[in-house]
Length: 256
Ligand code: MN
Image (cartoon, rainbow, N blue to C red; front, side, top):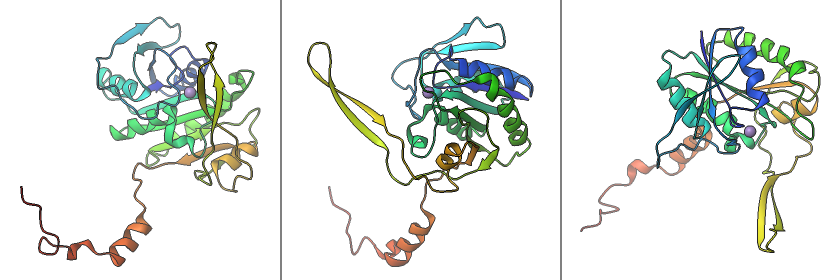
């Protein structure tokens, strides 16, 4: 099995080293990751300048750094290494729960993998003043990976690991109760106003969600899909406002 490992924290993050080490137990591993941190880059791609793909010395696995986004890394990684089976992303220093699904670069790399017809699994863990205890988390990453790699139909997965020893593993859904963004105003050393856009923790996460699982000390696994269509709303709109009745007679094409 060929396993491409990437992240959004950059090629030198301790999180990617931990994930790559675990991955070597399951197959051939190659690391292709951004040369600098690209957290919150979402699924952006670099289209206005060329990308570089440079070998980086590593004692563990073949490693390359890219001057681009996590999605760029998946594109270049899969292009330069044929027959990749699965893309692993992380372990991110910081959880990716609920609304983070939209802007997370870690998750975006996994999403990008599925766009290429590959499987994508993202790993994240909360990170505060001290670095996550990767020695403690690695056996859990191995358990989760062993389980998920045996489920070929599970294509896109968001895995979050709690702080400390997990109590177990739960299947969860994405928490989307409310947006958790916050803007903090401050001044730079020259006295000019500037702003930080950050997130604040939500309280009362619903049971069954990713956020609730992590709060309770469980490993959270959320299966995701790329199709964002609101199927219920689509059926309702089609029934209530049929567009097939709108013809060129009732709404004529503008003449030039
Ligand atoms: Mn990150």
